[in-house]
Length: 309
Image 1 (cartoon, rainbow, N blue to C red):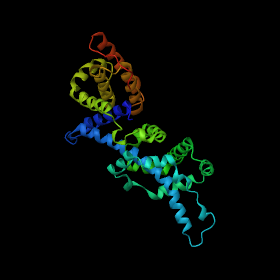
Image 2: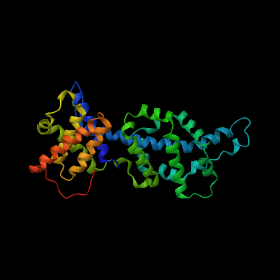
Image 3: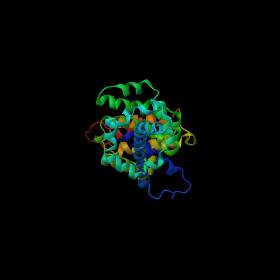
Image 4: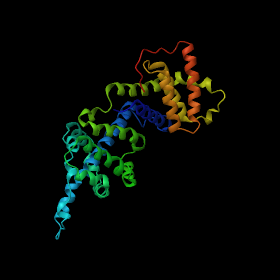
């Protein structure tokens, strides 16, 4: 479920921390630290789903609260709770993998119930919600659509919710886009995902091996990169650019199933997004030059592969 691009981002960030820490013993086990970053992604994914389900289930709380007034109105006695019985919602709630993830990460303890109430009150004013409540039957696509509407147009569109999630999870900025896509797929077919295995063995092996290889081959990659920097002032080269180029060179030499073109494009994109405005062009030029030289010298040996990114 987690993409190789996201894995590269987390490896890049951890390598940067390791390079810039004054106390180089602060992270005693980098591989364990990397695993913890993926655990955070799993926790964030689970919390977003949990928050979504709590908005839906608040309809029943609202109905009880309004019916218990001293002088309830007709509207108070007839709150529509259709959303709380959403069939996809209950497919999620009863899914064992989801329940286990809630417990593993102690997700319910993080919930801001006042924010749930506020977003629920915003939801019930929307025409999309009204149309859902008066629809007949429970067509599966309609059940999914209203959940996606709550996710995208109520939660993700709320500045309050964004501030809340950023306060709880410092990985939201990096993981948000990826997890949003994953959650949309999860809503489509909840029981197709194991929330305890968001990072499969193959991708975990890739991330762990990339991290350890870049560290172990630090001097090797620098010996390859430095001759290409003759026309550049070393002090003006962003440290993150050096890390990205070292990662790229490691993929050229030691990851035989990853096409060099994929490697170059991935690190160009990461340089553009995470480093300086000039970094994309800089990383592109250096990695392309290195790739041609390594290829000509026979040092790049790639297997037949399916395209992976």
